[in-house]
Amino acid sequence: MILLLIFSLSIDSVLNQPKLQRAQVGMIVMDLNGDSVIYARNSQKSLIPASNVKIITSATALTFLGPEFRFKTWLGLRGKMHGSVWDGDVVTVGAGDPSFGLEAIEQFVMTIKQNGISRIKGDIILVDDYFTDERLPIGWAWHYLDARYAAEISALSMNRNVINVHIEATAIGQTANVYIEPCTKYVEVVNEMITKAGDDSIIIFRKPEANVIYVDGGIGYGHRRDIEVAVKNPTMFFGEYLKERLNASNIVVSGECVRDKGHGAYREDRAYRVIDSVISMPMYGIIKELNTESVNLYGEAILKTLGAHYMKEGSFRAGVSVMKEFLRRCGADTSFIALYDGSGLSRHNLVSSYDLMLVLRYMYHSDMREDFYRLLPGPGEGTLEYKLNDLNGFIRAKTGTLDAVSCLSGYLRLDDADYCFSLIFNNFTCSNKEVEKIQEEILKELKKYLEEEVLYKWR
Image (cartoon, rainbow, N blue to C red; front, side):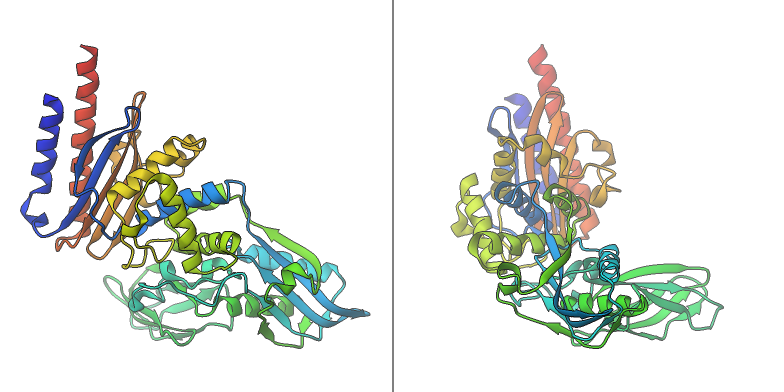
């Protein structure tokens, strides 16, 4: 009891420092073996959780869809063959795979070629109605909608719905070399970047209404940069790139790329002949990337898939309904929880550290305990690559960062004892890095207390 009192006072002193005077802080630490709370401060206050929402999304997906769930994308033909000419359409049907890559497009091209087709007289039909038309959740700030972490959501996604802009310095005073990957006419680049002496001063943006990327400012001599930019209308990005790759492989496409709302007909009635499909990695692998690299597109695709699978509506709202049902199973009072997305990028999300603790506790006592534990990164991995190195082997946790928001929630393991914790910091005016240092200081004090408690029990 004395040790706990000393620990509580030490944490209070850390949290009561001047730079946090007007900030909002919610914190809770639970002993999972004894099912008892070690420390709590404003633990039931609803705060912005940022990417800690991914903990809820991950747990819901594993519980409702399962670790072996896989996304699928179909390729089909509708029409008739005349020699090597396909008199009809190529049909692509998406079911939300956020990991569909450029190599999968090449697989589709090869399949069409292996079917003996040298010309397609019809269109490339793009069926993305598994998800509703909403491309972005409520609460995403407009000024970062061209950023890689705010890519639009579609049931037909490719290359995480981004273009990689490569910038290479030339001679000082000369225009820099700029090119994009994948190479496509769907995106236009306006290059006004100059090579200069000294540090980079890169300006890169895409206007919301068009797929025109402006590259301006300066890049230092001898430097090279790769910057990912989100594309507008990822469904058409998928189709136009497929068409370009077909033409590049000497398969002439006469028609256009057409987005077709099949209203389920393409999946259920099979109004075409399936010739190939791409199946994603299992959900476990998708979630591993979601939590380790904090890939927002994955979170939103999972959210909409939950809605499509259980509510027959691939919308953000339907997905949130499933997440709230899971939270109720964990014991949370969802009347005090607001969720608008699956990634945590929305500033309208409101969750308490207590709610996150309930999710971590629920998963710990489920049959997926060790799997879920390993799905969170440790120091040196992903978003924790350069953080908490002194706590390696002790912590696995998910970060969450927005302007004036810094969160960290996860598990602690010391010898044979397991704990879960949640730290949510909102509305601070110091830098995020300063708050991260405070969080690390708290965790070090916690580790010190737990080690002393173990020694005390052995005495």
